[in-house]
Structures are given as C-alpha cells and as structure tokens.
Length: 373
Image 1 (cartoon, rainbow, N blue to C red):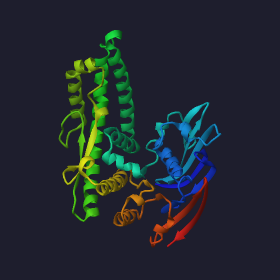
Image 2 (image 1 turned 180 degrees about the horizontal axis):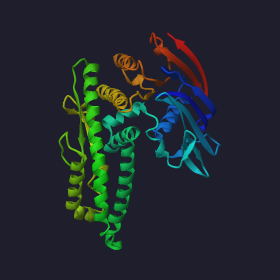
Image 3 (image 1 turned 120 degrees about the horizontal axis):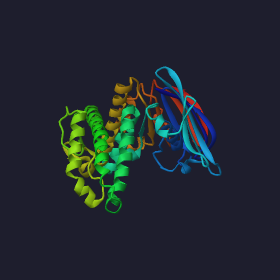
C-alpha cells in the first residue's frame, strides 16, 4: 500500500492544501505548532475514522469554518483508491469510499492500513488496560472486517445490558438479561479468540525484534489476560462456552453491583521484559525499545495478513530514541512508505541510497523538495 496524495480543506490550521507523497521516506519538518502532526492526524483519520488526539470532530475544524474535508488517494494491490472523510456542523460526519457515501465512519476500517508511532505509543506499554484494549481493537479492525462486526455488536449489547442492570430493580428488566447474555457469549467469545490469536502472533514477532535490537541481551513476552485461562490452541467455541459459564455463574453478582463484570470489555494484555512487568520495572529506555519492537511487529503482522506492507506514520519519535535505535528503525524501513515529522531535517542527511521527499511546513503552508541520496 502507498499513499499518493492527501488534500486538506479547512482541517485544523490548513485552509486548502494538497501534498503528494513519495513512495519511500517522507519527512515533514519545521518548527513546532506549524501543522506537521495535523497531516499525520488526517492520514490516520482516513484509515480509522478516528483522531489519535481528540474524540470531538469539532476540534478538527479550521477557525471560522463550518466543516472540513480530508481526501486521500492511495494505491492498494496495484489499484488507486480514494477515501474522503467529511464533517459539516449542520449535517455531521460521513465518509466516501471510491465515491460511494458511507454514513458510518467505521466502514472505512480495513480499506487502508496505517501504523501510528508517536511518543503517546508508550502508553500502550505503560498505560491503562483501556489504552491497550483500544490499541488491539483498532489494530484488528484494520485487518479483520469480521472482528469489527463482532466488536460493534458486543459493545451495543454491553451498553444495553449495563442500562438494564442499573434499572433492574425498578424496571424489571431481569428477564431480558439472560437473553442478552447468550448473544454476549457468542460475540464476546469470538472477540477473545481473535485477540488471543493476534497477541500470540505479535508476541512472536516482538520476541525476535527485541533480541535483534538488544543483541540478544533482553527477552520480551506478551500475555493476554481475559475472563478465563486458556491454552494456545483454544478455539472460538471454547471462549464462547467459557464466557457463557461465567455469565450464568455471575448473574446475581452483576445484578447486585449493577455492572457488567464478565467479558472482553475488561481485557488486558501484559508486556514483560526479562520476565518483569514493563509498566512497573522497566526504565524509560527499555519502554521505548519495547514500543519500537511492537511497531515493527505490527508491520510484519499486517504484511502477513494483507500481503503488502502498511504505511508507517512516525510523529516526532526520533527524539525519543537513541542513535542506535534510530538506525535500527530506519534500516527496517527500506521498503515501507514512511511519513515522519521532525523539527530538524539535518538528522536525515546521512540516509544514503534512499528516496527521500521533504516537506517544509510553516503556518499551514506546505512546500516540498526531493532528495535522491
């Protein structure tokens, strides 16, 4: 997959700008607060329908405008595809895929594959379970349309059940809950199965990368934590049946506290380094190494599933990595389209034999040049 062109209309600090990317490394440079990260944000929205910085689309509208457009052209499996994300204050948000309107932004998931690596990516390593669930959900939704369907149905059921549990005593919704639990078991069990498979595969790639980055001095491990214990060869039916058992046994407890306490909406996964928790015992340098290895593992996973590499978005991460890790990352990006933000282009002058396209960003204005080293 390759991003060819991005057009921004009234998006953040951009009035109307078009940027034509190169197939290799694209460097967006300039001082802070000029609009570099806004370009990565627009690309990520084109792939996921979501911003990594806000949940409110109003925040994305240029000052004194009533909406915005993000229009992207990308080559996927040898064919050009267009994605448009539009938001108008009076009408709301919608997407267009190859000219066909889609009311739900989630419909664009899986069309494009982009991996976003920023200083905030460290929160996957050291942050809350909710951050890690969001990470694995977005990752799987981009690579598995079935998973997206299961997740949407499950979340709707959990929302309805939560309301019923809170109102069970006065509104007598108790008879409905067992019916919902049957569906929750079905969709929740499938979600757990796909998460287990993805985490196991990411873990294998990550183990290899950690050893390579550290010269075999350190070892990593990623473990999936859900509502039951399981073997690596567990199938969907196992997770479905175990969740059904948990929901039946825990029904009275859920009614008593008025919350949904069993199911993959409470999942987590733990990343270990040298058999110790990365959240509690790793240094900042070690956490950055784990984050780097996780991003590279994602690249391999997506290529294995989709048959082509995703686009990699790097938001001011080079300053977070020491020289050896910078070199390791750039070496691994020989055949991956990469879009990098930085305040200083000079640090990339030593990247010989690479097709590099540079874009200078200043006050929402983009100018470009090509370096053929």
